[in-house]
Image (cartoon, rainbow, N blue to C red; front, side):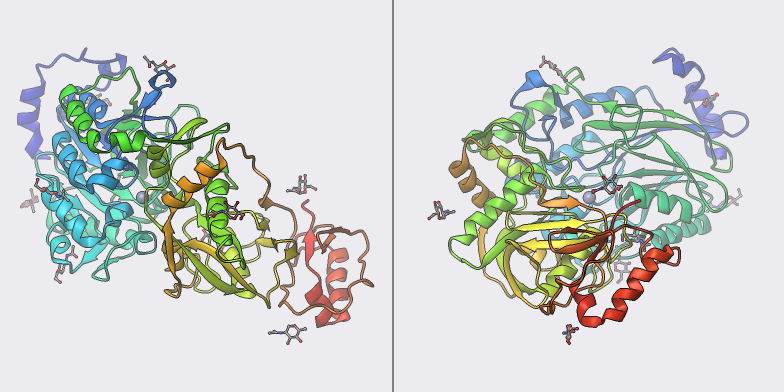
Length: 608
Ligand SMILES: *[C@@H]1O[C@H](CO)[C@@H](O)[C@H](O)[C@H]1NC(C)=O
Ligand SMILES: *[C@@H]1O[C@H](CO)[C@@H](O)[C@H](O)[C@H]1NC(C)=O
Ligand SMILES: *[C@@H]1O[C@H](CO)[C@@H](O)[C@H](O)[C@H]1NC(C)=O
Ligand SMILES: *[C@@H]1O[C@H](CO)[C@@H](O)[C@H](O)[C@H]1NC(C)=O
Ligand SMILES: *[C@@H]1O[C@H](CO)[C@@H](O)[C@H](O)[C@H]1NC(C)=O
Ligand SMILES: *[C@@H]1O[C@H](CO)[C@@H](O)[C@H](O)[C@H]1NC(C)=O
Ligand SMILES: *[C@@H]1O[C@H](CO)[C@@H](O)[C@H](O)[C@H]1NC(C)=O
Ligand SMILES: *[C@@H]1O[C@H](CO)[C@@H](O)[C@H](O)[C@H]1NC(C)=O
Ligand SMILES: *[C@@H]1O[C@H](CO)[C@@H](O)[C@H](O)[C@H]1NC(C)=O
Ligand SMILES: [Zn+2]
């Protein structure tokens, strides 16, 4: 672009290249060269979740600095101020979910977050789902308090006056010849609290429309996106659109890079349908890392070269003292309250695996809810919560009120609901398959459960047939029975798409109150995983409808073993056409015995 050639070269020609590491000898990052190539650096952060201050590795307050503490906007600010000064062309972008996660949000709402972001000098921000946790109105007030940070999200449509006038699909940086498009997870209405006035459209379509509009109305070819949709969706988006070169993502809390535990490359490169490379980067969560990538665009806006790696915010990172002093001051009103010790735990109450499998903090919270309610309501059989509502590990040692609130910050209330066995089976099937059986839409969280229920499932089965067995109390789930259990108001009203939404329940105490009582009763906490959510081989087929079977004693298929009342036969490939003749014959045989008998049998195919 003509814009840059003369001025940019004149300004940058005199600058030394020895300003940073080895690499800068090759990548000078200075303006536009004679071939029209342009270098710029992107810095990005996502899912800070109100971690204004540094935190322990589990995300709770940094109470034991000798074990290592991370993040904090005072470190981020010092890093950004120092690095941006070395890169004449750079953009500093916020990929959403600033809200929800520490007492800085619980106590102040968005107020101190806005004050902090204003000092960080972000060039643009997209909205995360959690920005809607306090509803449209409060989000509108937060946005109104941001000075000079464009809020962009191409797939948010709102007639709420405060949002309608502030949210734009994209922002153009004319001096850099770059457009940045924002996008927000379409699941937001199911996992947060936007009003009816605010809707979320298909992100691929919205981004493509924005690109088309930018191309139709400007000469800009360099187009990037900040996407609060998750790493998997980022890859789908990259493959599905034309004209986008760079995606800076968030929402899935994915660690990318060469460090231990990383889930992919920084950047992850995906080819789009034109055969062009799209670069995807994201920066984990809580501000533990600041993403950083330098790119060289050619004259047509294609990325020719890149270099970068996220910066780790550790206890050796420089701190902006002025911002840290403000954060310390803001902490004072809740510090004493948060520091109160409620009990101790001998084990780490782990949160990190809650979205994948049974986790200790999930067990503990669900048991607290079950214990809380079963005294008052003898028929309550168990508790179900969403993994997404369990936010941070509680380390061994003292458990403080601050940790409880950091782990369960939402103020969700316990509710008691009732479901028929068949409906309950479908709910659980939907959760393990990630697709709601009733409405066909995605389920957006895994579950955690209390004592009183055992869930066995086979992730290798097709969607809709992953649930293998459910035991309630000592008996298999009876599809004709009715079950009373406790869960959260958020879930009962349709959150995470677990249940068919209902308002037919009484609202009891909040999660943090119930957990506080339970800790006081249980201290010192000493629990272990007990397999209440288990991965098994096999399949629950055909579905039973709860009728008590006639006699099953006569039935004993060859080469089978019995597990908890279910019949196990060696596995082939299920019912698909590549099933071995042996299995096909068995299926045929069962069919011949009659519907009543089939209903009584649940076959578990042993895995190959
Ligand atoms: C941009 O960076 C590349 C290295 O990737 C370097 O070769 C080139 O000289 C730089 N261009 C400008 C205009 O600084
Ligand atoms: C800094 O963090 C490391 C672990 O990341 C820890 O071992 C060390 O004790 C910490 N240093 C201080 C001064 O707290
Ligand atoms: C907006 O700023 C005003 C004035 O500083 C403050 O009183 C208010 O709490 C802020 N609101 C939000 C949501 O940031
Ligand atoms: C604001 O309202 C106008 C008119 O209804 C609409 O065209 C526009 O898309 C809205 N903006 C947003 C961000 O929803
Ligand atoms: C795009 O570039 C052409 C050719 O340089 C110019 O005539 C036109 O005005 C530019 N359009 C915009 C929107 O800047
Ligand atoms: C439930 O009842 C048992 C036995 O009466 C009692 O020990 C326990 O503290 C009660 N739990 C709650 C949460 O009230
Ligand atoms: C199963 O459901 C998941 C989650 O919605 C989805 O990503 C996947 O494509 C589905 N698989 C099939 C074969 O439909
Ligand atoms: C499933 O079966 C395979 C092969 O028989 C076995 O290796 C594996 O441990 C089984 N998995 C479970 C969860 O039982
Ligand atoms: C359940 O299965 C039994 C036995 O096959 C059948 O008689 C009954 O009609 C079924 N009930 C429902 C509700 O489908
Ligand atoms: Zn999110």
